[in-house]
Image 1: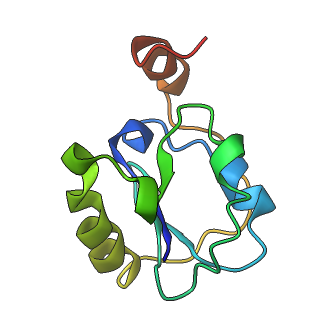
Image 2: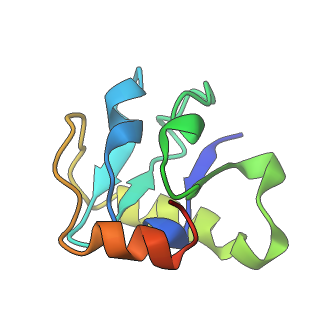
Length: 102
Protein backbone atom coordinates (compact mmCIF):
# COMPACT_ATOMS: atom_id res chain seq x y z
CA UNK A 1 0.00 0.00 0.00
CA UNK A 2 0.94 3.63 -0.41
CA UNK A 3 -0.40 7.10 0.16
CA UNK A 4 -1.52 9.19 -2.79
CA UNK A 5 -1.55 12.93 -3.45
CA UNK A 6 -4.69 13.99 -5.32
CA UNK A 7 -6.13 16.98 -7.16
CA UNK A 8 -6.62 19.21 -4.10
CA UNK A 9 -2.85 19.74 -4.06
CA UNK A 10 -2.93 21.19 -7.58
CA UNK A 11 -2.05 24.89 -7.56
CA UNK A 12 -1.52 24.85 -3.77
CA UNK A 13 1.60 22.80 -3.09
CA UNK A 14 1.60 23.20 0.65
CA UNK A 15 4.65 21.33 1.95
CA UNK A 16 3.61 20.67 5.55
CA UNK A 17 3.44 16.97 4.61
CA UNK A 18 7.02 16.92 3.40
CA UNK A 19 8.30 18.18 6.75
CA UNK A 20 6.95 15.14 8.63
CA UNK A 21 7.80 12.45 6.10
CA UNK A 22 10.52 10.12 7.49
CA UNK A 23 11.62 9.06 3.99
CA UNK A 24 12.21 10.86 0.69
CA UNK A 25 8.98 9.83 -1.03
CA UNK A 26 7.66 13.27 -2.03
CA UNK A 27 8.44 14.73 -5.44
CA UNK A 28 7.39 18.09 -6.85
CA UNK A 29 6.73 19.90 -10.07
CA UNK A 30 5.69 23.52 -10.55
CA UNK A 31 2.06 22.84 -9.61
CA UNK A 32 1.86 20.10 -6.97
CA UNK A 33 3.43 17.23 -5.03
CA UNK A 34 3.44 13.49 -5.74
CA UNK A 35 4.30 10.43 -3.64
CA UNK A 36 6.59 7.71 -4.97
CA UNK A 37 4.81 4.45 -4.11
CA UNK A 38 8.14 2.60 -4.05
CA UNK A 39 9.56 4.89 -1.36
CA UNK A 40 6.44 5.47 0.76
CA UNK A 41 6.55 3.40 3.96
CA UNK A 42 2.82 3.79 4.64
CA UNK A 43 3.32 5.62 7.92
CA UNK A 44 0.49 8.10 7.32
CA UNK A 45 2.28 11.00 9.01
CA UNK A 46 1.58 13.21 6.00
CA UNK A 47 -2.21 12.88 5.99
CA UNK A 48 -3.12 15.09 8.97
CA UNK A 49 -0.56 17.71 7.90
CA UNK A 50 -2.20 18.47 4.55
CA UNK A 51 -4.33 21.61 4.97
CA UNK A 52 -6.43 20.77 1.88
CA UNK A 53 -6.93 17.04 2.54
CA UNK A 54 -5.20 16.05 -0.70
CA UNK A 55 -3.51 12.89 0.62
CA UNK A 56 -5.27 9.54 0.92
CA UNK A 57 -4.34 6.03 1.96
CA UNK A 58 -4.54 3.96 -1.22
CA UNK A 59 -7.02 1.62 0.47
CA UNK A 60 -9.35 4.54 1.24
CA UNK A 61 -8.97 6.39 -2.04
CA UNK A 62 -12.41 7.33 -3.42
CA UNK A 63 -13.22 5.70 -6.75
CA UNK A 64 -13.30 9.06 -8.57
CA UNK A 65 -9.68 9.69 -7.49
CA UNK A 66 -8.22 6.26 -8.37
CA UNK A 67 -6.45 7.68 -11.44
CA UNK A 68 -4.12 9.55 -9.07
CA UNK A 69 -2.38 6.27 -8.17
CA UNK A 70 -0.91 6.05 -11.67
CA UNK A 71 -0.29 9.79 -11.87
CA UNK A 72 1.75 9.75 -8.63
CA UNK A 73 3.75 6.73 -9.77
CA UNK A 74 4.53 8.16 -13.19
CA UNK A 75 5.27 11.75 -12.11
CA UNK A 76 7.38 10.85 -9.07
CA UNK A 77 9.69 8.74 -11.22
CA UNK A 78 10.76 11.79 -13.23
CA UNK A 79 10.69 14.63 -10.72
CA UNK A 80 13.12 15.75 -8.02
CA UNK A 81 12.67 14.78 -4.39
CA UNK A 82 11.39 17.49 -2.10
CA UNK A 83 12.24 17.06 1.57
CA UNK A 84 12.24 20.62 2.89
CA UNK A 85 9.31 22.91 3.41
CA UNK A 86 8.80 25.67 0.88
CA UNK A 87 6.36 28.51 0.50
CA UNK A 88 3.05 27.43 -1.02
CA UNK A 89 2.31 28.57 -4.54
CA UNK A 90 1.01 32.09 -5.09
CA UNK A 91 -2.76 31.94 -4.75
CA UNK A 92 -2.66 28.82 -2.54
CA UNK A 93 -4.56 30.50 0.28
CA UNK A 94 -7.35 31.45 -2.12
CA UNK A 95 -7.44 27.95 -3.59
CA UNK A 96 -7.62 26.52 -0.06
CA UNK A 97 -10.72 28.66 0.58
CA UNK A 98 -12.25 27.62 -2.77
CA UNK A 99 -11.82 23.98 -1.74
CA UNK A 100 -13.70 24.71 1.49
CA UNK A 101 -10.84 24.73 3.98
CA UNK A 102 -10.72 27.74 6.33
